[in-house]
Image 1 (cartoon, rainbow, N blue to C red):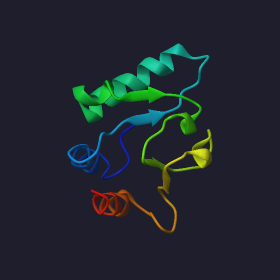
Image 2: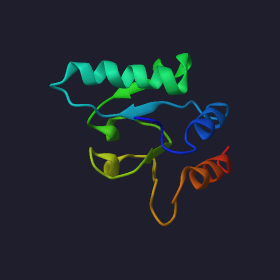
Image 3: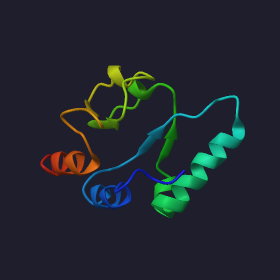
Image 4: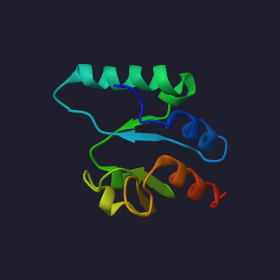
Length: 105
């Protein structure tokens, strides 16, 4: 898979201002999916990013300020910080998400 259109540059910009982690899920019974996700992060987001990859089906356990996600599954709806629902009416695209987050710096 290739990254979502226009996703890599906003990611790189936001890492200049935020202690940014990549929180994702993967099938627990498919160990090659774990490696595939890690390699994807390395390829598209760079060497620094893979050390910030967290794989979990319980996104609410990660106590941070913001969670950018495209759905409320896997406990994203129980996240203690602010859930930014990418693809919603409020945040229809990553540029909108980026502009919003930069107001929080």
